[in-house]
Image (cartoon, rainbow, N blue to C red; front, top):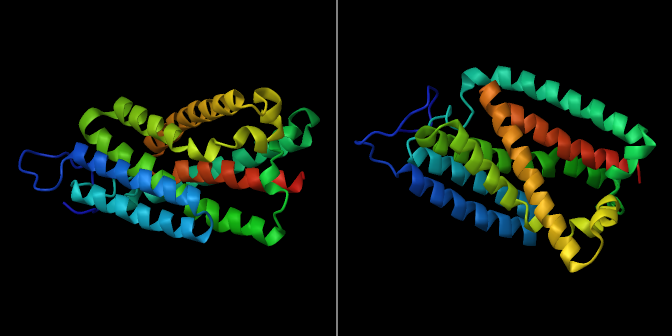
Length: 246
């Protein structure tokens, strides 16, 4: 059954596509390859990888009999999802503004990765790399395809758990230098190898917990646009705040 608008399709004995768990396995293979590729070839190659991987994952969902509703992209839910997304972006903006203005929390935005960024490079990250290279792929993968596949056969709790655990593990490679790049984290974890390992573990646990929140947003809104909006706001507005507070 192709990706078409409608209610969640549940596989039947006569379904002639790939099974749900083989589809989950293929999804993991695609994600591992994409994670390695985007880590070693950031920038435009990583952007192209994200777009191709996202399309492949939607193809996997289709091959497993999935619908747009399974992916959180049913046309009837998009307007509601957009309203959720705009509200969440506004909320993050207010929280970040307060955090940037308060001396006690201002240092949380410091990041050595922003030091050499020009205004044009910042805008490219905020308007292209984050929404397409990060948010689009990760939301399609974790709150769209993986969540939708597992939801059909195991329900909400399993879908949330599998999606969120894998979302946490997805952030191992991006977190390898986290303790040394963010001064606030260097103070906590130090710059030793054990400190770096603890920082990575903390990042995995934190992003797994964030994955639970994003899954719940998808469930409550019925749309992938809601977690997309929050995900973009946290990342992109974080870049913007960090750059302005250099």
